[in-house]
Image 1 (cartoon, rainbow, N blue to C red):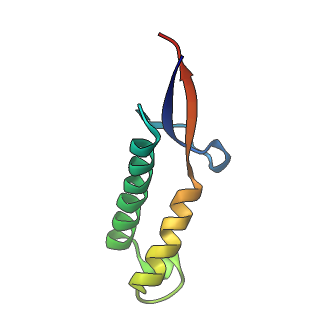
Image 2: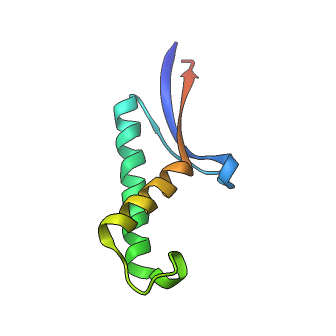
Length: 84
């Protein structure tokens, strides 16, 4: 029995996609973090802070933290058995 780790969107938040399958948990955790970082970067570069937080400008340190936490809530790593 081999165990794999699946990075997926959490269905509780409307997600349906599998974002990746990894051989070890460390790789899955790294992908989890990178996925959140990419989403936060894209959001802060393209979205209007007024629409996101109701403020006229980004507070880069604080808003980054909150957006990372929001993204982390929408993803999960699931350990699954893999039969060869």
